Amino acid sequence: MILRVIILSCCLAGCGLTTGGSASSRERQLDALPPLGSAEDINGGVVRAPITGTCGMENVQHFVGQPRVSVPASAMPDNYRVVGPNSVVTMDYRSDRLTVRVDEYDVVESLACG
Image (cartoon, rainbow, N blue to C red; front, top):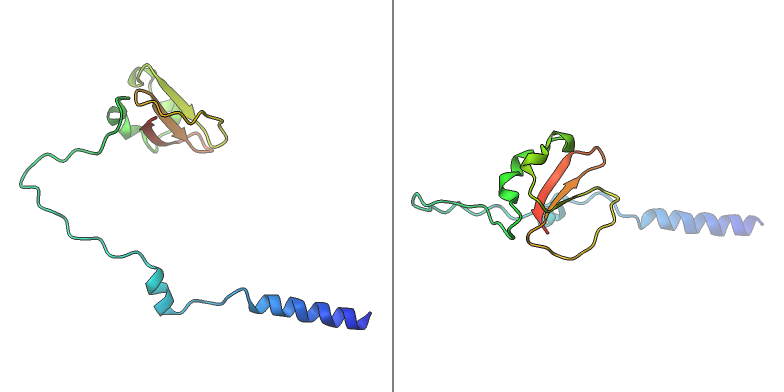
């Protein structure tokens, strides 16, 4: 019985040694994201956000971060769906459908076509 306890203790002690320790500053530097590149001059041209689809998402982006109930129905396109954290949804992509994603507090996380 004592032998089993000793063997079990040794195994558990070994597991504690393999969980890793604190990473050195050199290792943390290697894991860091590279710095951002410099911004390009567009010579006064118009910069547009990348929009995919025809769902009208560019007109409602200012509602991100707001409670879902603060989004007026009149601002929504004809074809939209609200998706929560535990919602079951189809995975078909519909460029004309606006998908409103909300978090567990019913706050708008994103608005995208699909």
